[in-house]
Length: 228
Image (cartoon, rainbow, N blue to C red; front, side, top):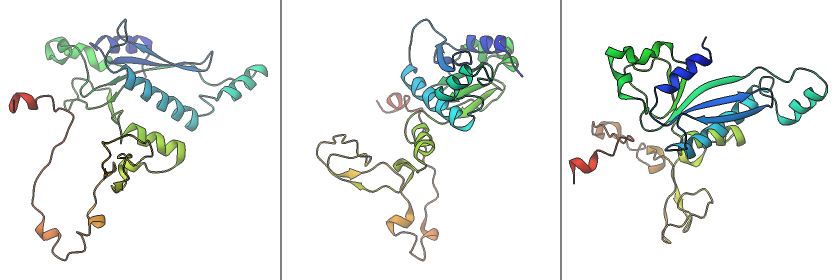
């Protein structure tokens, strides 16, 4: 178990893009608080994430996080309006934006063993000595968190995780958004599967595959230094 002091010490390790996600049980509201005085990088994404998480908590744990109607009805009847307060730490970004000193054994990694759980919406450290309580969460961009949200809202798999199809002119994303793409047809967002391309039907398909690894991560900012 952890307490509010653990959460406060956890957030001190972040240079920026660290946030408190708070449930205030007295008014039945979710709140985001920034680690820095002003909203800086990652705020737009964390707001999007917070709304998805808040909806998921109400949907899956209605007794703990009641709807506005149920909360008002319970309060009017003088009954139980749900559980107590909840606080945990969220962060977002290609990597956790923590202070350099927290990566050093000489500082005992800023005493990270005492940190509260951290939901990191992005990549996390392979070495768990840095942040043992950090939990890898989906990226805030499509097809990650938004696709989770589409499933919990509508019970369907989003287009970004389905076989790609040719989108009509003026709708390159294939989602009906009407986002212009210079008037050209293009592949909608989605994945490419061998079945849809008719490749797997070939008897020697698996024997003809070329062993290779393709890496397309989010750590692409180094490319301009390699290929100026």
